[in-house]
Length: 115
Length: 115
DNA sequence: TGTCAATATAAGTACATAGTTATATGATGA
DNA sequence: TCATCATATAACTATGTACTTATATTGACA
Image (cartoon, rainbow over all chains, first blue to last red; front, side, top):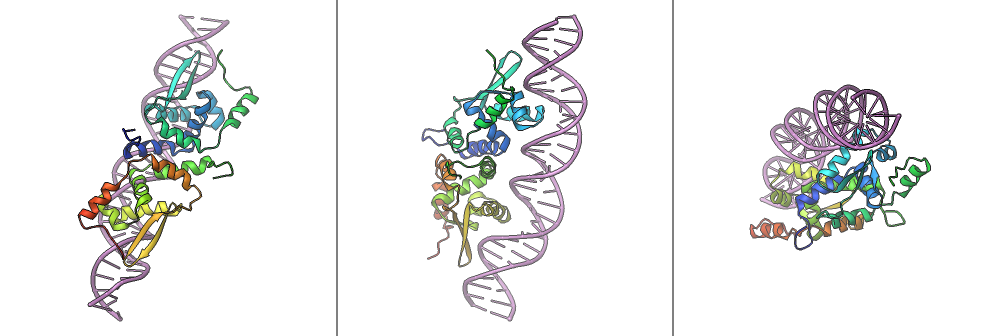
């Protein structure tokens, strides 16, 4: 974002292209309220582990998400310090919450918890 | 948008994918404040007429823009009645205005005006 | 009615993207 | 130290995308 609080067109289209994939968009919405690890995404999206890993890499490459290892697992979370976070947040606010996915994980005992 | 004012994930990702192209995103920002015809876009983007036409078609197919013939020209404008217009508008508000492009057209005497 | 200007469509091409399977890496715990 | 679990990467493939050039369509107007 520049001084006017706007984001240049090239940057904006790059971000929107990344969010223009249902899997990644849902990941971002999920991460906005819950940290998740890779194996949880595999379960939620019923998708192969490499496919999930590759989506996360794209989000990580432009620093929309952060990763943090905890024991065996690598947890992903939203990078709220991203220069364009307000822009992203604004978009995510228009999307339906994905709490059901998390609740289902918990119900199945598949929610990873490191305490 | 559903009753909660949210937009379902599939729809949202479809819209974001369309906006995730710098040409189309800039078109939408331009159209938010100015009606434009195809030949103006050709000039602004320095792009072939078929390429412009094809971008406009994608925007038209999901009804983000309307077309209206006036004399020889077909003018495009934002469809403010689109169900997801608030979502789109919100995104466009974060983008830098494109008035310079329009001003340049006018300076070159290439702005089409039907009165 | 025939020509022209503006626009749309069709067909082809090069490159991008999202998956796949196979393999590598790296921490954990017996 | 070795086997295992979670994750990442590499190589490949099928499909999608954004252009290109060539051609069709449509309305305006001489």
